[in-house]
Image (cartoon, rainbow over all chains, first blue to last red; front, side, top):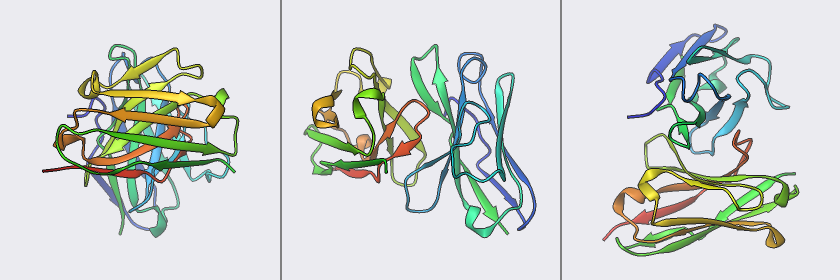
Length: 110
Length: 115
């Protein structure tokens, strides 16, 4: 059971928009920065968003992040088949003194 | 170019030990905190341990406390994870990742614990 809660799967058609939610508590999302990672099949995770809504260089603006209270959301617009991957949210938990991840969300582009 | 290259994984029996290494290049290793993150086959990401720049601050996930030890050698641009008393549930790909935001990851090294 993950500390952060994500939907197991989401799907949408190419060109559409999808959002992935990440729910936590005041000890993690509520008071610490959230990051989002993309893991393509058979590869290492890749940072998509950090500090709730900042994109590393090279990450297209189709990917966006937001945080409200104890929840965070990853948005992906203009979906492409190459976006099919597992997506994880992560943050520091001040009560546990640990990094915590969501269970991951599998994105299918129909 | 930032590179992180893990090594040291392999097959070990329950109760055994392994030492993982992560060789860093393309950046000033001594200026960055580091993490170990693992992923069991078919499962999600699980953070394992964190070490600060100087090594003076260290954190572990509960399931590895007392069994795993994270360390670093800034002169050798290397991060380590000493894993003792290994259990079947430690079977996973182990990644090293830079900073708490984990902006760079290695390719991972597979650890298999089985009798």
